[in-house]
Image 1: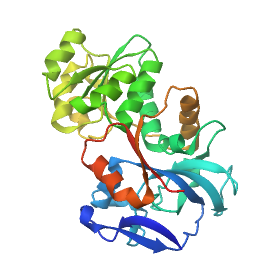
Image 2: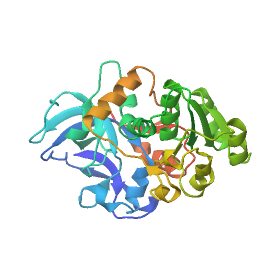
Image 3: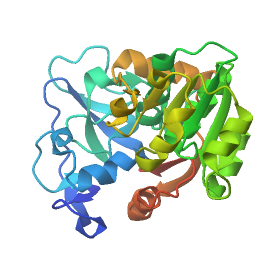
Image 4: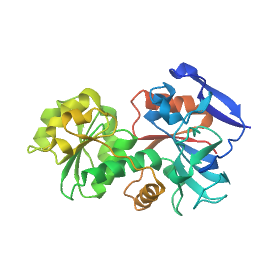
Length: 307
């Protein structure tokens, strides 16, 4: 039996609970891992609320929270290639296993070995934030010297996008609240504080001719405010707002396969995708970890150290 943290029904924080469960049995195409570190993401509380039920793998309640983790392979299901018992790995719990737990199952095609020199803490941040940053910037395909606006730069994904964009030689302007300034500027972002200045006016002053691309992490009214700042509406990529085509932009095309995970890991080793980790919680403090992310005020990446 191992401890896990999840939810017994759909709802808000009040449905969350700790519970004991047997180690999951890996199905075809899955690996059982002992979790060392789990990443915390906004998608976790969105899943708990029942807003995207199709991503939970149809597992019964109680369900474990979390979508990404790093750990050690304990067992393999059938038809698993490239991963062996004892391997240090990182990846996605796309089949609904959840990662805020002592053990869990990961989808083998969406899991990769942790390369030498990369810590489990860093690896656990790459499946969601790392590969999203790679996907968004690949989709834009901007050359060195181009300008990109990162709308909502202060969170885990936003800072990953910004760091990778700076590494690619892009000029990066980012929007966020006052509390996000320090971390954004530390990775090379020219910061625009939406709580203290007019975002549109400030951005136009910095880039009068319009941005070559925009990566949106905020969505909603914020997206609609900044979208006209792009020189070409098609070069607005949103990570969280699927209505972006209404503005002429595109939703991010996600690649969660092993090859993209390995690519993100190489970039992290090279210092081009190193996450800004601002809080590390033990599993016993998982409620506080998720509450910070759910509040919308988290700066950088929050992780849960399980083992």
